[in-house]
Amino acid sequence: MSESVSKFRGSVYRISLSNLDVVLILMHKLLQYDRTSMIVGDIADLKDNQGTLTLFTNDKGGINDDLIVTKTDRGYLYVVSSADCADKDSANMKVSKFKAAGHDVDLEFLEECLIAVQGKFSYGPSMAKVLQSGLTDDFSKLTSTLATVFGIQGCRRVGVGGCSCISVPKSGVVALTEHLLANREVKLAGLGARDSLRVDAGLCLYGNDIDETTTPGKRRRQAKDFPGAEIIVHQIKAKTARKRVGLVSMGLPVRQHTPILSPEGKVIGEVTSGCPSSCLKQNIAMG
Image (cartoon, rainbow, N blue to C red; front, side):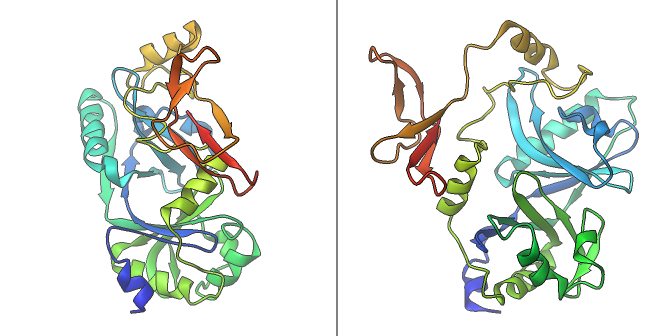
């Protein structure tokens, strides 16, 4: 095992290509006819093997976690959610499953790791060049369907919003990471690199920009059959008093929990994320 991989063999370690990260994370399958009933997103309209960003909500309309859901061509939803929210997500789905008694829903937890690639490497010829040598099929066919990559069985590709991810069984994550790191374009990166790309794209980080007290600004499906639906729909119609905004700093980077003031000096909010922008070449934030 290479020194760079063994050094970061904890539950979370980051790599870059401009950015590859390897994360122990909660993954599971939702199966059977009513499998979309726990998800806020309009999953039914997705094409096979297409994914989307969506949410787990609670009965008060707050966000329990954000997640990626892929509608597979094998009749189940492949769900990737946050490692930090694993216990909460598991409990949330068990409660929902219990409340949905009589509905045709089943749940299967998977022990897999996620290699997430961000930046210019994540799509296009660079990533294809690295992975194609380890595939027997065409790289473009590597979707949520299971495939063998560099001899490692059970890999699949999932990701949205400028991030291309490879799900891999825990037993094969170190070997696959070493294969990727063997390419000169692949570099280890810290969480700051991820944050810069995330805030540039205006994407929220759970625990910073959204949490259990944050309600979604948009309803993503017509049926009101997800937790907290009545509260969320009412707030959308009545206009919520709390909104997310983007900020530009003319000076030093503005960090999390910094108060946001009105022109009169009144506290009207707080910064939830802030960092230098690689695109704008200045410091940005959201709150």
